[in-house]
Structures are given as structure tokens and as C-alpha cells.
Length: 162
Ligand code: ADP
Image (cartoon, rainbow, N blue to C red; front, side, top):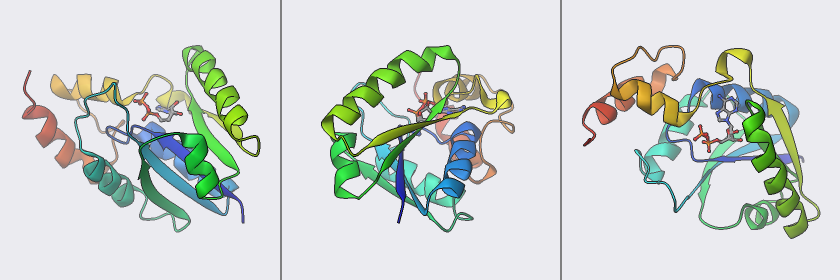
């Protein structure tokens, strides 16, 4: 059984992330979307909230499961028998950082490969931080955020302290 892991902050999950998940789910027997705990970022949503949001948004994909991890991704992949890390590539700016991460993960776990799926053109410039910025100033987010999490997102961003 081929298992892949798609890691990220997903704060919140966007239509760009969902597009990568739907495409990767077709390529593997099982896809684990793994919310990684990042010390540098103060998230808008808790780990539990982000996991719940991803579960709601991916409910139609029977081979997708959701998890979270605090620590090294290479170790997580080994523990869960993942052969591949999935990454989404947007503009060239993602490339250098992701290339370095792929090298490091392969060094830490030589069994592990990284696979890059290019962003769809309409999501090329979409990031969770851009969605938060737009949401904060009241922009229409219909094209960027899954409908299942829209109300929760708008409620949270409008009540966020400046
Ligand atoms: P960000 O906070 O930058 O939106 P995450 O850390 O949650 O992103 O990203 C997780 C993964 O999803 C990364 O591999 C990232 O490159 C990818 N990704 C993020 N947004 C998009 C998008 N709009 N299209 C394709 N891939 C994306």
C-alpha cells in the first residue's frame, strides 16, 4: 500500500491546499494530511480546529485521513509507513526552500521521496496568510476558501484582536 503525507500549517486550509489534496489522493492508496506544529507562527486556529476543518473539507475523499505532528516530518513518515511527502509548488519562491527541505528529509530518511505538484494557475498566488489578510479587510473569499469553513473563518477573523 502506497501512503503519502501532505504536511503544512493549514491555518486555515484553502482551495489551493484542497486542490493538491484531491490530486494527490488519486495518486496514492492513502493520503495523510498532517498539520505540523510550527513554533514560529502564532496560528489563528488551534491544532484541533485545523484538523476538524480539514476533516470537514475532505469528507468526500475516502482515502484521506487527517493527523497532526509535533517534531520531524521524516520521523513521522517512517512511523506511519509513508513513502512520499507531497508538496505544493506555487511561484518560484517556494522552490528553493522546498528543495532544501526535500534534501534534508531524504538525508534523515533515505526511503522517503518528495513529490511536488504544481499549483493550479488560479491558486498560484494563494496562501493562508493572504486569505487572512483579505478576510481581515472584508474581501470576498468565495474563490479561495472551502464553503464548509467560510462562516467559522469569517467569525474568527472579524473577532481577532488587531
Ligand atoms: P501557507 O501557509 O504558505 O499557505 P502551508 O504551510 O499550510 O502554507 O502549506 C502546506 C503546503 O501546501 C506547502 O507544500 C505549500 O507549498 C502548499 N500550498 C500552499 N498553498 C498552496 C496553493 N495555493 N497551491 C498549491 N500548493 C499550496
